[in-house]
Length: 40
Image (tube, rainbow, N blue to C red; front, side, top):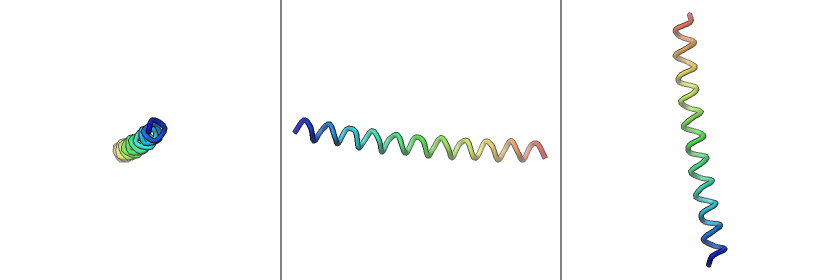
């Protein structure tokens, strides 16, 4: 049971990390697009 819950925690943590990374990358792309638009 402990091993299973540990694996589940790692899986959930990894999924949450992937979501956070994708959101951060999306924000960076939006900011970069705005900055490049202002430069031109």
